[in-house]
Image (cartoon, rainbow, N blue to C red; front, top):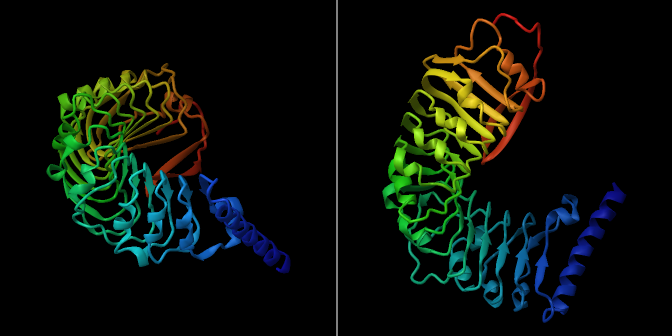
Length: 390
């Protein structure tokens, strides 16, 4: 115990020494990075972040992610006129919750701002003048705003990546000025209260002549309607398309096969129906295909899966038990799955040989989304004879 206390004291002293050295050399230093992992969690470096950090006028990169610290206000940031990157992730900003935006709005050079999990509760509905003309990354996820998404947020035309997940924010699809977000590559609205028609949302994203959107996280909202065929095909840069746990209905459009860059498609836990289009099999870059907990019909053949050479995770189920697997007994899958979920489907009278051949490890895994992170839990799978009855 005594040795552990001495180690913790040494770690804290090292961190404080580094801050002192930075302060002494403030005219020469351009980067200050304090990461809790660097000093181990046992260091317990906490308390208030010293406001005299604001004297570092040449500072460009300030990363305090993970420090068990708090800030009474952020007015000291005004002195960091050269700051381009600021990460206060998990720093408690409860005491600064009323004026945090005003202070940050005084940093015109800021290009990346990360405030994930900062105990923020106040997101101003209006801001007279937005100075974030260089801001390309904004992350205010995992806070408790419990308010509507303000319009000024979508007026930051320089944004490339916008993360708003798990912040109890409300909006209607038709309230979002999509034309202002032509440069947007990432839109993360996971686990909020987004309402409206998915077709209107996608049409909004393709208002720009060349949509840049790559990552679209809309899981766990109240988005409804059907996926549009024509406008969906215009999202040529889309890599991650996550709509799980919504109210989406109707079939998967045939145009899905034109999204050649797609790596993850998650339509699980919706109200979709119809047959699975053959175009799914054209998605050669697909790693995750998750279609479980819908109302699929018709047949799923090897043509749907033959082109998915990179597939790692596959999930499908039909609540009305109307989906039939129609695979050749001799078919050998081109992929090696690490995770598979098949429920309420008609696989055949015998356990399919292709399923055994397509598993990389002898285990079934189940998927659970928690704050956008995928957790896997494995269960041993006992194989019997090669033609066992189901």
